[in-house]
Length: 173
Image (cartoon, rainbow, N blue to C red; front, side, top):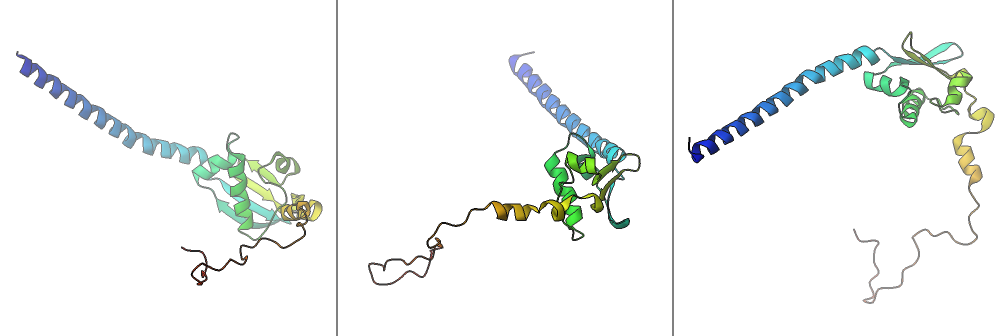
């Protein structure tokens, strides 16, 4: 076998290996994605968020497996848990004073995660809330300083006349 035949044989083997690796990777993705999806549905599917007040169920919303994993798993982001749970609560027109993902919310019974029934229960009666300790907005307003004396800079300050005598109508776009 001459050098040309050897080069052609090496090229054929390289192309064959590339095609085999590509098809193997594609097959791996096509098989693993449905398996992972089914496992996520089995592990995290069927969770709900219930919001109650004075013994009355205000809302019950199902969680997708991804949302349930984020809200229920101990290693999840507390900020994402908080945003999701507050979104459920504000969706029914309520505000709460305590972060529903905080340790304190679990201690006072505001948020209860029930693994047996796959429910995250939020009892608004247990919220130490703004009526007892001030809302976030009130805290921000109370901590702001009084403005300095004098005119406030508004951006509408008079401009000197242009050299050609024509005043500008506003900022250029």
